Structure formats: C-alpha cells, structure tokens
Image (cartoon, rainbow, N blue to C red; front, side):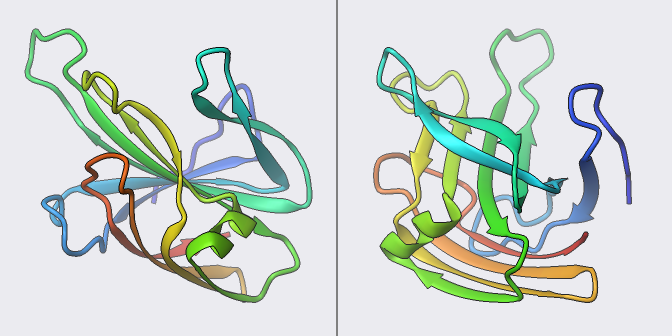
Length: 162
C-alpha cells in the first residue's frame, strides 16, 4: 500500500491495490484508489456544457478509482485515463443502488484521452453499486454501462481501507 498526501488536500489517501476489475481488457493492470475523507463534490457544468467535479469539505467520503495507460514514448497526448467517482455519506454502513439511484452517490465516469468528442465526465445512470462499510473497511461492488462512450472499466470490486 502506498500512502501519500498531496499539498492541496491533506485528507487524501492513495492506495495502490491490484484491481479486481472483470470483463474488461485491463484485468492485469493496476488501479489507484484515492480516498477523500470528509469531502463532497458537486457536478459543475462549464461554459461548453461539459461536467466536472468541484470538491469541498462535507459529511461524506469520496472515492476516486483511477486507471491510466501510458502512451508510447515520445508521443504527445498519448495517455489514456478512466476514472470513477463515488460520494458515500459518512453515516452509511450499507448501500445497494441501481440505475438512476446511482446519482444518490453522484457516480460519474471520466474518460481522458486524445479521443475527440468522447473525453470528459459522464453521469452513471445504468448499473448497480453495493457498498458495505464496517470496521474501517469499505467493500465496493459496481457494474455499469456508459452508453454515450466506450469504456474499459465496467466492473469494480474493491476493498478500501479507510
């Protein structure tokens, strides 16, 4: 496990864990899970109509699952990244949500690449999430689809140390 704190948010913890993502072409890669305790976010729309998360202090734990493929050496804009954001209320011990109800967790998928018209954040409204939070461990099981774009992450099964 790698634990680090950034200059901007001393409440963030980075955990490097072997992913248990299934049904995707990245099953042998790694995912970085960033845990932001007492942090909430709202989805803000910029002037171009694109969504992005704006973070602030609040009564929830925000989890960000990051997957990155490095581009070929010497290429500009060759990296490919996908993220999944979840905002779990601090008083939640067990949650099981589906489809439109995923927005109770403000679940978003982010895709960042040189892929015109596809890069950006998408609200997740097709899928399911179950979360069990006990004794400092949060177990997350999620499966989802993003009809607006292609994605490599579609299933997440992780245990996060809080």
